[in-house]
Amino acid sequence: MSRFRRFSRSTLVSFAGLLGGIAGLLVQWAADPARFSAAQQSFGIPFPPGILFIAGAGLLMLATSRWWWHPIFAVLIAFWIAGVGTLAGQLTPNLVSPHVGTVAGTVVMAAALLLAAVAGVVSMVSGRRRSAVPAPR
View 1 (cartoon, rainbow, N blue to C red):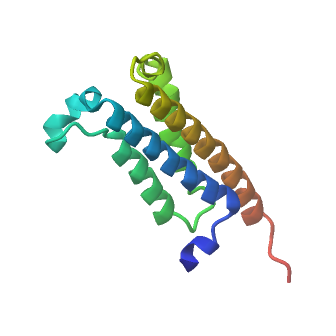
View 2: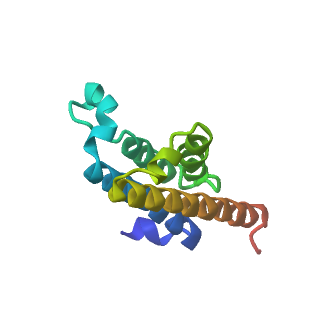
């Protein structure tokens, strides 16, 4: 637990946003498992692969936590899932789905990933500023 004490508040918020993104995907999965049937070939069950990508981004943040730029992984995965997903027309149909759980899960996922991205940028900016200031003698 001591490892988490050294993270800035914005980094912890970024991690929380990633967890919120996973929670949103779990809600979508519970509401309409058939929506993830394309992943059945890889996993044997219809499973949202975005969970693995988000978890991977979180693990990469942990692995690079000594460097000021470690939240870039939260920013990138949030941009990829929410930003590119919207531009590619894959996120928008979930918002007008007849399944209330799919809509709710998509809203939770997108909002949480947006939070992770914003907090990640704030964490990188403050971390860069701290690393650029010479230590007092």
